[in-house]
Image (cartoon, rainbow, N blue to C red; front, side, top):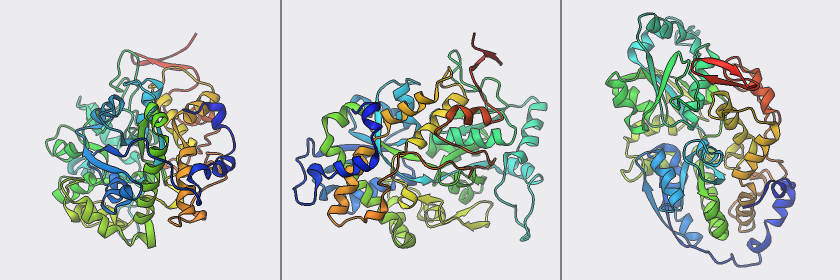
Length: 461
């Protein structure tokens, strides 16, 4: 594993060095391991794995891969750490959370970002009926989007006044869904609660109680009335529409435009022991991502056919196609064009940007999963210990040399940080170079050296 100093050299130098043993004139170096077992959760954003398998991209790299669905995100992470899985489709927060010791502790790294966007927030029909009264209407007579949590706040307040806790589901404490749901709620003045060392439920001081529900169980849990809404990836928002049990009110594209979603993770030990195999894996996944976005998403229907199979997502084709083919259905019959709901390659989607890691770390600190204030340098060093653009660039350079990718498709000269952006539902600007200033700019959440204790904030002495 490279240390922070090694990571700080310019990515242009890394790109040149990436030619190395993977140059055009040399045969690819020998693989340390050619039989691999890779895990995933049944969500449409596992698509790069399915495509790389079905189209023979793994075999092109000399890899014999078995893809295995996992019961939930904890089981998936644990099996990667124990070595039962060589790597897996992961929540972007999982390698970071494990590496900093929140929950399971292990050094996990990623050299490949699997996609952008792809999630939504769905509420029950009853909650939507109450929310809808607070939603502005557009010229077409339909609800104006994006729908902010401001419309949900009076509903939550009414539940609380009646002594009824308002409960929502998300898929894992370090999931993108948890942080996106929290961001959306907080932007609307609704407190989603804190994590503390004594209470890891994340519900301390909460207006809305968030709890973990595995993605495929979300619709049934909503229908049973155990939760009143949830944040999840596809196809489980569209499943609620098809079943007539709920209404997706906002997508993560509307919460944070082109936000990073899943990653492909391996342990640092595995990466160190299998450097050539790691590059070969990333090569196959990059090719799959290119195929998924090629020619204006022309291959998406074929991808839907793959994903609908029981060994992958196992949902109805029409449900998967509702979002995978560039549209998204909110209220029944209100289907809108959202061409970037699922992005797998364009906008440099697959590059593991340090700034993506920093955003997740800021949210961990904001809600108490990181219990103490950290200097800006800590965020940078932690991101660089987990995200591995050096491996990615080796894979990219090899694909370009082989004629399987184009030079302009990769950000060769980036320092690993995206430009500051205000493409959030509340318009707040995120600059990953100044994470503490960003945290302090958010209206709800920990700031400075604050930490939650019981239901009150205290300042560290």
